[in-house]
Amino acid sequence: MDLLIKANEKEKAKKYFPNFQSVLMQVAKSGVVNKKTAARKISRLSKKI
Image (cartoon, rainbow, N blue to C red):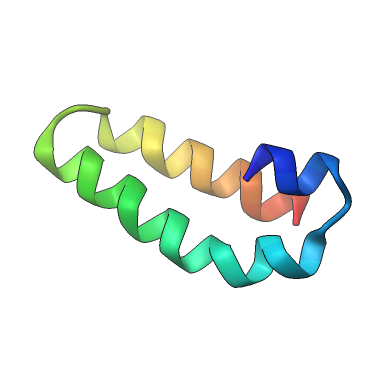
């Protein structure tokens, strides 16, 4: 996601964002990443888009 945003490919980032969000929340649910950390990352990326 960061690479898409840095490359100014906002349309591709918008299309990929729901998949990214889903995968990140699944990882958070399994306990690999804290849920609040995942939510923070999603929030920051949505602001950049």
